[in-house]
Amino acid sequence: VMTTYIVLASFTDQGIRNVKDTTKRADAVRELAKKFAVTAKEFFWTLGSYDVVAIFEAPDDASMTALGLAIGAGGNVRTQTLRAFSRDEMNGVLAKVG
Picture 1 (cartoon, rainbow, N blue to C red):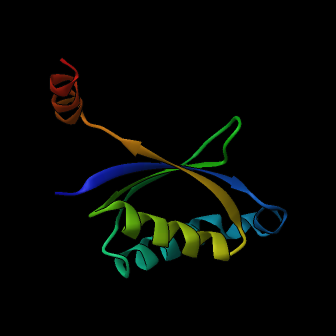
Picture 2 (cartoon, rainbow, N blue to C red):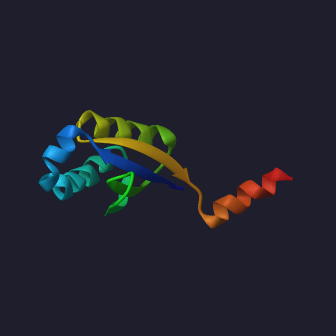
Picture 3 (cartoon, rainbow, N blue to C red):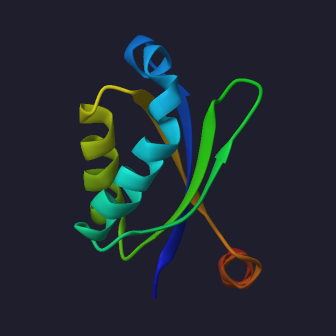
């Protein structure tokens, strides 16, 4: 069972200086993710507080965390990772509430 994660990314100074490479960097992240058994589902470039929103599926938190650290080490973005629950997953959580 794969878990869904939403990653909010903001360009660093280095990332914005090389913004013309952002789609190539997304392709590189997609390939990098495979090394951690993570699947990059979608990338969206956005307006507002975050520059990129990405959706990943990973087998566990450790795999997603390792990918996040590897992405951060590239120096182009700072990220915030959110664990996402599907409707069915949320219904399972709610069933435990009482």
